[in-house]
Length: 363
Ligand code: NAD
Image (cartoon, rainbow, N blue to C red; front, top):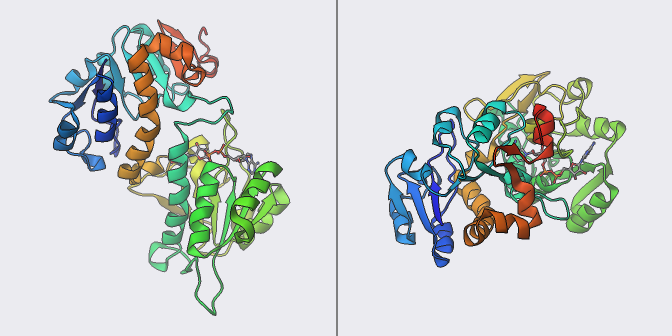
């Protein structure tokens, strides 16, 4: 199969959908990769790196989009809709539910749309989302530590403390993929860490994983209020699949925090868990202060570390791409239930219920 990799065009998006390692993987099975010139530069991969791996460099987006399967990172923007054509396989993050125009463009041109974010394993996990939650989780503590520094508007706290001085306190609400990774970094820094989750079994797993290094607490308004009040850094890492994030940390709880404390709302992409995270921030201007608490609410945190994120993402996407390329999409989705769940548009129809329901269109 001929696979096209266009350069990402969204603002500040430095990831790319294929690494040289991915090219080698696909080439092993006789597939050809056509990558738009400089598509990998933001992630530290040059045209020479891709050529050495066996890819062909094309000069225009049009040439990349002309191939049989297109792999991207972000959903297409309107300037890219003109490249759609019947039968083209588009394998990328699509996030169609809030994008009726993109959905219509894909249906009108009968694109086969396979969304990274809805590929789902039998245990309900989302393997093509996990690495980005790992990145955002690890970053959240790192970023929180930075904004606790006086020069960045924080209270001047070193999370790990030093002998003779108290350690900083980190409260993590939501102990899933992102929350666990936030905790790993916080424990590594020597902070005093509390994780709250609604699921007692998850708390048991965390207790086994971290031993005495973290305090686990069942998530309820009382425990959240207590541990937010004490914390120097609060990380919001809750997910209720398919739903808006619940506002678990109230404005009153934020007011109870010490001046110069920091909150990092990873779940801002789902609306955020802090009543006071009422806006999405950007990498250019990532924080605002409310009730003397520094708020960080960037919705595409992995974009700040494109090298790690690109490699992490392609580690998990390329094996699915190999299946699609080897078998053709029809056989590949018939033989792989997880991949089948990724199909959002097919032959002019929406084939993912939540997207159809959200947009009130035929399923
Ligand atoms: P996950 O499903 O692995 O974990 C979510 C956890 O939240 C689960 O353990 C669940 O039991 C827990 N939870 C649910 N309700 C709760 C409650 N009331 N109190 C406490 N815990 C509760 O999800 P994840 O992959 O870790 O993702 C977390 C969030 O991070 C999602 O909103 C995801 O979209 C977001 N995310 C954001 C970025 C970004 O750049 N901002 C990047 C990646 C992921």
